[in-house]
Image 1 (tube, rainbow, N blue to C red):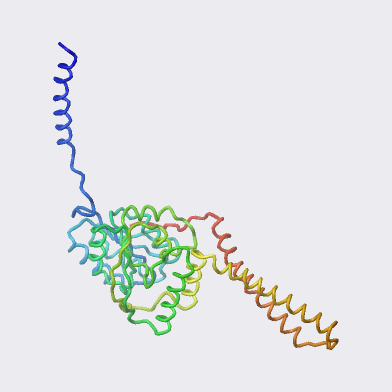
Image 2 (cartoon, rainbow, N blue to C red; image 1 turned 60 degrees about the vertical axis):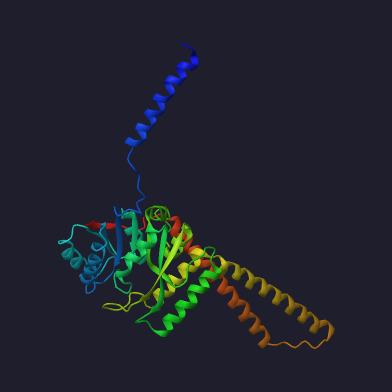
Length: 341
């Protein structure tokens, strides 16, 4: 038989075999587009014994209406009250709840990180346990994710239950950080957001200790979208972010995502050197040209105070960054877990 006839006989059988194999392969579905996905909800908790039962009830009601698989991950961040007991009591009725109990208080941003480390979901929602961020908004975040967004931010339109001072300073801070940051950080956005599994896994690779989660999430990139909402007042209790703690948190955000303060320190140092040079020229003119030099005290004190003040400011700014480096090079774990329920 000629070689061409052999080839013509073999070719149809090969094609048919390939078609049969393709038909036997399982159809791969887009997880976000299908209803068969796992939703993880991460909830940091600190001294929220009066809020915990209501928070767990509302979250359960919301996610069960979504007809998807879910897990609720609560992180007890070293609470001093009966928050852990309240969480364990409500867990008994719901096997989808997991509780991560820290060995001590490690901070809100670390608690969020621990929740993301342990989340298994195809989509992961971060929400605070004080119910200022409404759990009823979660379906809208998921819908944006199912439309293709990898990160969905909940953007605040209004902020109930907060002082005018806090609202103004928050508005100013978010816009200042956006202008000076090396990363495009969204304004009027807190920690209430959704991350896809890929975004959550990418976030898990970022292990710096001075964490500003909002900036770290923005640093990831990926496709992002927004859902606007009205932030509510706390369900119960008082805020865990007093002025000094909020100031520390704000400084962490600036120092983590901008070196502008260091550049300003250099510029101030340059201005001081220039001012000193001009004053030296003026002093020489007075002494040798006009010959009216008078031993004075006021001018000397003014110069010393001005230059000394600028130097102290610059040292403080440099010290802030050196302190961050000092913490980072220790390479301690971000958190320690006492138990998981």
